[in-house]
Image (cartoon, rainbow over all chains, first blue to last red; front, side, top):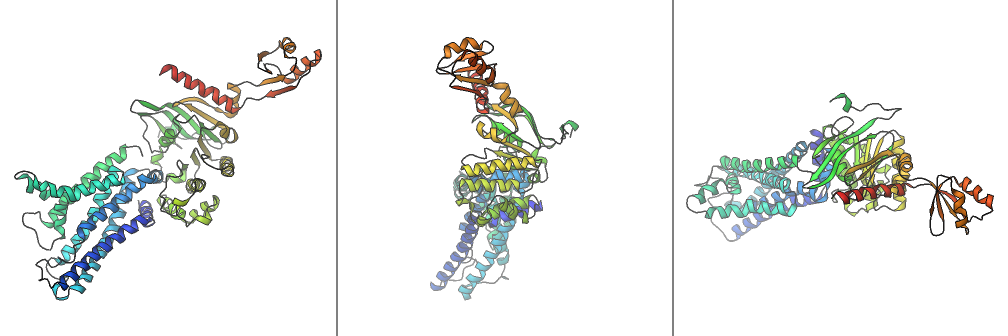
Length: 247
Length: 315
């Protein structure tokens, strides 16, 4: 298994698209935070009750970038036919997929953590009095939670990529499940709207990125757990198909 | 593992390295591979021959665990491909040279393959040297020509120094120099005692490389035989004679079976010497007298035609 991990690690850093997606994520997070912070200072906005309001504004966009990166990690192999070369080298398919998932999860988590910490300190430097500190209530939890949320979103993309095996198709599925549908299910009739919405993908998952619990929503860890169940279910379906289908 | 599935010694130093038993692959109602059984031995080049669409690539993908057989089984040195711990050290395969991620450099492509099978990174440089790609090791594969991609694919196949090599249509799209290079490589690998299994739809190509032939048509086995036997069995050698006095010559050739053509005769069952002497005895002039050896090409055409005709009747 260590051999597979080394191999997958080499694969991830030797493809330019991966590096560009990571750079895009960093630039998005950092750029939006600095922009929001500068605007806040220039317009002399009042101190927000949410201490990281001006810091993590890029998260929603970064989530899609990470999901796209996750999709590409596996759909890129299907597009080029590399998957067959990969399966000749590692014919045990579950081992192959586990290797990809583990390496990607670690790479995504480390990148997200560093990006979010850099973004936090950069935006605090701009904000001055409007800002907050790592020690303020809920701040560190929200920062680490955001990194976990970004990583999980990347794995969401990877699971969809493994299932759908087609880059545009998997990216569209990711956008639908993670952005479009969470908005739409709110307008389900009667009690259904809020009930389903609470448990729906990113609506549940993003609770971990807030400094304070949101009324009517799941708790941070509860919500993140639900998000992980979504990902796990798609990953399991993808694994079953991966075993059964011809490559 | 039942003992009969473990590679067993044959005469001399040859071993059975690949065994397919009743291999069948269906896609819906189409049968791509139909009850194929064969073995492939070490120390020789085995040609896997058939017209396009005969099921050769599907069979190779099943041998390598990429496609699942609908029926039947296949073992590589005694067990399924997918159960080998380090398959690249057992089997090197080149299926589709363009099935690589174009964004990686040649070196990195081979490096990630080497790492997955615990092959030392130093081996990457060796195989690049072997196939003559050292100069472009740090260039991205996307810009490679088909010939260079083919060489890279062979480098990948050689990475684990495997006992078994499988090539699917390796000379497709190559220039004459590349074709000669691959042909020589396959002969050399077999001479080292390795098992070389190579598919082609080109009979002429197999005539120059293979020792043994497995011929398929429409997913079914047509022949499993040595190249020599294959020629001998299908077509016969004949004597081609031309003469301005052909009508006078025919009665003299009663010892053989004579077929009249526009300007020459084809004589079966007599040697060129016998025909020449018969003509000389009557003083008949001969303009041409030669023995025509049957070609693999002709034998193949005969066999595959039969398979298409047979299929046309049944379907």
